[in-house]
Amino acid sequence: MIGSLRRRLTGLYALLSALVLAVALGAGAALEIRALQRADAQSLLAAAQAVADQVGKGTLSDHWLEEQEQASGCLFYLEDNGVPLAHVERTGAADLLTERAMEQCAALQPGQSQVFSYKTQEGKTYRCAALALVSANLRQSPRLLLALRSAAGLHWQIGWTVAKYAV
View 1 (cartoon, rainbow, N blue to C red):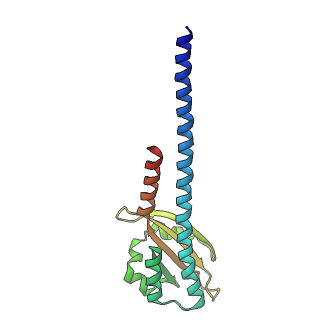
View 2: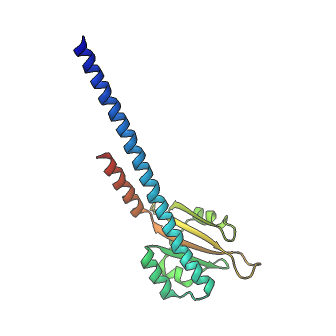
View 3: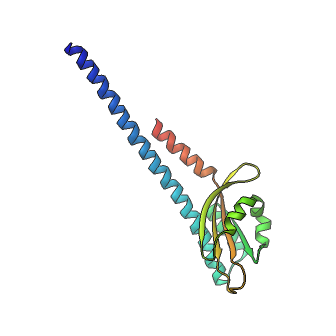
């Protein structure tokens, strides 16, 4: 009888230990994934803010934008009075935007920012940091500045994190 009780208690202890360990690993993975998503959003906003600062200075050039795009790994979409800049047409950033993404950006008030994900018409997922820049002429609508980055890198990092915690 004592031997049977000991086996049952040992089994129960092993089961509870496994459950506590699984919960701890799941919580750790969730926290790391949230940190990855937050870091991605912050880097996108920082890239967009760097371009916004140059726009504010009035020293924006195509060469500088190209350097920033390579450094941050994203494409920039800029509008002035509702018209995309020539740089946007050359890089193809306008082709990546969907109607739903533009509607989400149009809801921004001057000075507001937002980071969101959306799918292109080809089904690829992109992350977007949108800034509604206050124009110098208050009668004009705000200038729209978007930083677009493929979410494939973030998804790979999240997948790696899940695999790391699962093993």
